[in-house]
Length: 272
Ligand code: DGL
Image 1 (cartoon, protein in one colour):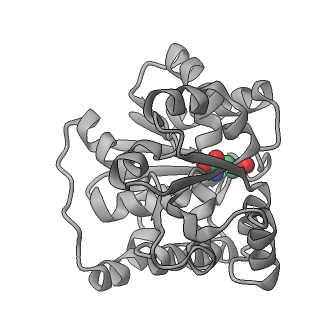
Image 2 (spheres, rainbow, N blue to C red):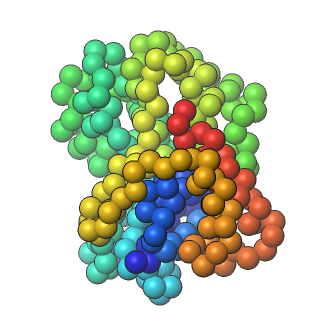
Image 3 (cartoon, protein in one colour):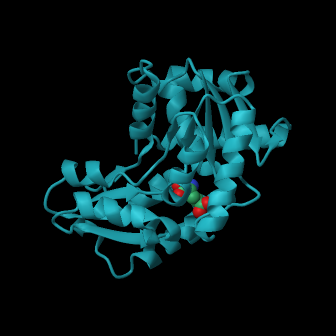
């Protein structure tokens, strides 16, 4: 089965990375719309237009199922994509439900792009699952910018995180929901700020689990990470995945090295 995965940029790589762990038998076409990143500061109309273009491109390349590995594009465009295209299409939304159900008493912080936070999709979700009003929302668009520059552990990143939460006490939070796929790269800095007692919850496992269900395929149990890590260097260069940066096939050494570094990073931060 050929599975298309798109995001505005490198955030979606975290979803692909999880797929490598759990569904390594499938083939992937990964599309990062780097020419239009960030989506989180654009209008819903623009984002929908890009999402349609990306999906059409992946379909033309033979994708038989699609993962919109972008909370922002899902918020505004998922209905339109499903209306237009006749393949299974999965989206992503902030994992608020597991956060509410999996923790008690203390508060929950959801971080996402401004678009995801503004849109009705998240409001409807909160209305359904946040009965006790424990959830707070924080837009963090600059993390997308930092990620695209491959800047993850700098003082600027820590200062930005501290600044955004200047009026919040991190010890009041039992969970931090990463409502944007780009935010996975910042788990170390977020962990440092929120401390060991706050659960960091991303939507990647849930999405891949859902994908396996929809496609009726079995999912790997957690693998020995070391073994997998050796393997993925092979996976990256093999026919198993085609990488596109806004319609351009990624073939040059520099960009492949860039992707390798990002997969390395994702492997390191996966369990934080
Ligand atoms: N990675 C995307 C998300 O999950 C959006 C980042 C952006 O382009 O603003 O929301």
